[in-house]
Length: 237
Image (cartoon, rainbow, N blue to C red):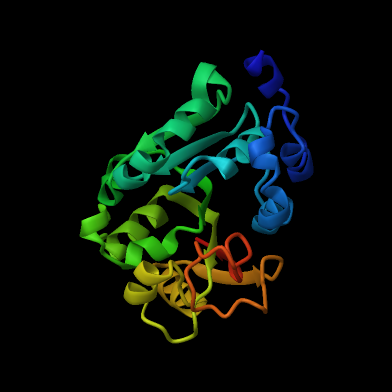
């Protein structure tokens, strides 16, 4: 049953978000995450091959699956610490081949060197701050940031979009500190480092901005959870 439902291709982002096979667990997050506006801004189209970097449990992966359709594909990529956290939810999401155009990949960041597929787009949602800090006690190892971004750049076709969303930190703060303590990052750091990695910054969307966020408390604090001030940044190779 899942397979038949999910083979119906969406003709637009809106149709993908409204796809009947999406779970209520995902749908209740849409108002806070605004996937229609986000994916329209990034310009993801049917037929594309998309890499979902540190895609977690696959909220965006599933929407992308419906959007790119049978002629496209989505690679849901997590490293082993992320996979350990989301394994159950990802396994449930992908069981019985319910998203037949989705490939699940678990690799350490430098393991991306082994991938040979080229992608039309990549997204990195609420996770790029994680590549800046180390927290060995909680199972998060150091990541070679420059090497990681270089691998993503290599995997993208010329002209491909790289869309980033992350929780904003106070301007000028050290990403290795605030990444660990409050799970945020100064968007200026992202623009600087993605530009240094060879990407061209094309612009940003304000649909997830929240001027009432003080930018200095943990994104998991109940007072701000799912309501953080977030930057949506669009880059191109």
